[in-house]
Every structure is written in C-alpha cells, then in structure tokens.
Amino acid sequence: MKRFFAVWAVVLLILSCCGCVDGQSQPLKVQNADTVMGTVLQQTLYTVDRETPAVREIIGLLQKLEEERLSRRLDTSEVGRLNLTGGEPSGSSVSPFLEEILRNCLEMWQKSEGAFDITLGVVVSLWDIDGWAAGENRGVFVPPGKEQLQEALESCGSGRLTLERDRLYLPEGMELDLGAVGKGIALNQVLMYLRENNEITGAIISLGGSVLTYGQKPDGKSWSVGIADPEDTASIIGTLTLEGEWFVSTSGDYERYAEADGVRYHHIIDPATGYPADSGIAGVTILAKDGFLSDALSTACFILGKEKGMELAVSCGAEVLFVGKDGSITMSEGMKVYYESA
Ligand code: AMP
Ligand code: MG
Image (cartoon, rainbow, N blue to C red; front, side, top):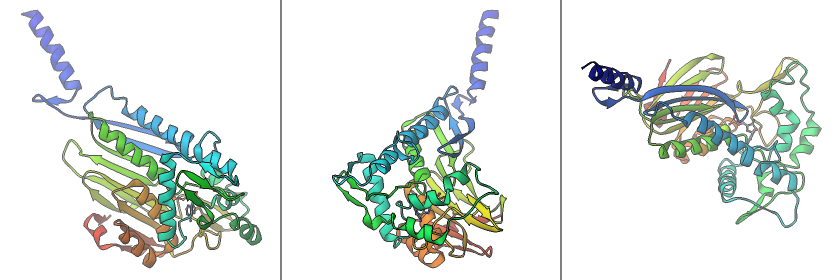
C-alpha cells in the first residue's frame, strides 16, 4: 500500500510540473531575452515540452542567418562577400534564398518610387548608423557634409543593380544594406521553425522593431502588441489585439539616432537627399501576414509620409498606422479593427 502511494505521489508531482490539469496538458510559459543581430530578441513561448530546446534553437537560427547571409559587416556572410566582390564584370552568383530577397527588395524599390533602397550602404556608413546602434559616437558625432553625401549617393541606386537569374551585377563601390528588412526576414524564419515544432502552442517574439505572434495563449486571450509613443518611448499610444499569426513592424525616428549641435539625426535615410527622411512622421507601424513585407513597408512608409505611404501599404495588402511629429494618429481603415488607444 505504501509503495502504491509513493508511486502516485511521484506521478502527481510529474503531472503538476507539466502543468497537467484533469489529464489535459497545459502549456508552460517560457521567457527569454537576448541580444541577436545587433538588437534585442525577446521570446515568450508556450510549450508542452518542459525541456524545450526552442529558445536556444531560435537564437541559433537567427545568429546563423546573420553570420551566413545578411550581415554586411562580416565577410563570412553572403551580403558581406557580395559587397567585397562588387564590380566584377561577370557578376557574382547568389543563393536561391538571397535571390528571392533581392527580387522582393527591387520590387519594393519600384513600388515605393525609390524610397526603399537597399543600395544605400555607403551613405549609411557615412552617417555611421551602425556605430550609433552600438552606442558609439554619442556626444562626439559630426554629421557628414552635403558634398560628401552627394558623392556617396553616386555609389547608390537600385536602378543600377542587375539581377539576372542567380547572378547579381553590383556596380563598383556600391554596398548592399539589408538593415531595413533583416528583422522581418528573420521572423519569417522563426515562423517556419514554430510551424514545424509540435510542442510550441503559442508564441510572441519581438526582434528590434518587429514582432511575430503565433498560435494561441493557454488562457484563450488574444495577443496584445503595444505601439510605442515616439515622444516618450517608455509608454505606449495604443495596442493591437491579434489572433494567431501576424507580423507587426515599427520604424521610428527614436529607434536609432545621434545628436550634434542640438540637432537629432535618425537612421531612416531619404535616398533623394542622403539625409534622414523628413516627412512629418515620428513613427510608422505596419501589420501584415509576412515579415519581410511588414519590415520593408515600415521603412518605406516612414520616408513616403502619410498619403503616399498609406496608398503603398494598402496596395500591398497591409495595414498601417502613422504617428505624426505633432502626435497625430492616422491609420488605414483595416487597422481600426485591431487598434485601441491607450
Ligand atoms: P528600419 O528600422 O526597419 O526602418 O530600418 C532602418 C535601417 O535600414 C537603417 O538602419 C539602415 O540600415 C537601412 N536604411 C536606411 N534608410 C533606408 C532606405 N531608404 N531604404 C532601405 N534601407 C534603409
Ligand atoms: Mg523596416
């Protein structure tokens, strides 16, 4: 009899650790924060596997994506190598993975009438935007001069990029920068991982300015994604209430910037001038079913401003919300279904 109770005690202990109630397996919540791809990755996963390797595997997946494909600073990555070998008359071969991304980027360049442009690498370097991200330069920042920017702009322009099947012809001196879509591409990969993982029943994952929602919460409540107030980034102006799979990307003038002589310079560049875009917008949030699209559109719409940006986002099947520099909020009709002000 004693043995019988001892066995039951162990069984009950295991069940309670697994979160089992009435024989129904209740998913456990696992949370993690880390720095990946030069930004903050926050994971909340609901899993029926107590020992889930998912948190670590997702971090590994993103590190691999950065190191092998997207980083323009590492010569181990495909983008880094393309930038080094630019100017080859015979072009450079690109992987099917990057080829599809480059095609989508060129399509967005066309649709946005040149506002979204992945060939601004030289201008981005001149502003030292990657240095701002690392917290360097604050206080001793000297903005580039107009002539320097004009010269740098001569090395840019997606119109001068040729992609013929799997060969990319990158003009000498041109540098690719996929910083505007890297987080969205990464979250697309995370979604594929989650779909293949039967133990994860729900997740909300944020990487820099982009968020992925997936599956369900055990309590049946919706996902809630806050939209930062550009004036006071510790608070939110409102929330999006979402069910199942969604991508939410925000581009804002408060995300990365440097100051010189009382002027604040942010990281979203207008390809027409080489200067930070000034379209009266402080932040743009996009809601879409694809990570690349949400991330690309948030950058493009920031540069285009309210009217043209709204037109572009809606034509791509996405929803958009603009926060003006004056604090005004403008959104697409479809966004109103999900948005509630704080
Ligand atoms: P995001 O925060 O997604 O809007 O992306 C901004 C990043 O994209 C910058 O840090 C640059 O690396 C890059 N970028 C800046 N301006 C542009 C632009 N006009 N088109 C494409 N990428 C850009
Ligand atoms: Mg973006």
